[in-house]
Image (tube, rainbow, N blue to C red):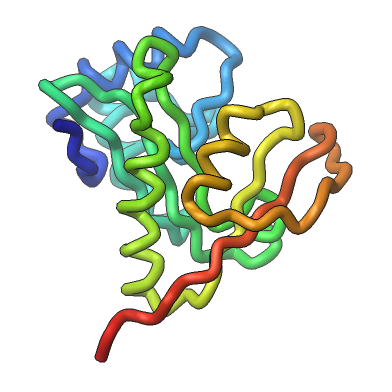
Length: 166
């Protein structure tokens, strides 16, 4: 059974295995990784983990049997980045896809969004990414429409969140 864990240096080797599987140049949404982050050395990896709060996001890794299977991020700011990328971003390593892990993680992180008093969340995926679109729709995503960006056309979805009981 997978679990969502906060990023930790303890999983450096397992994270690197997932990162390597994605391959060079691939986008690993949900991790908060930028091209300038050095993550191979233990020191660089620890610095990257320590820097994640700069993004004002909640990051979680999907971990099962000591393997990092993917990541999910709940972004809370800055507002212009959220409008571009959405409140939520997720990615599953290629060998772990097709198991429903993204759907499971998305449902879990929506509970965190409720705890942060968000009334709705925006999710964005590339127009041709049908797997992500289906995942978002299964979680209650309602298509706002297709929008052109500097990275190509994207689907924009909203998920309304019921408030937590008082």
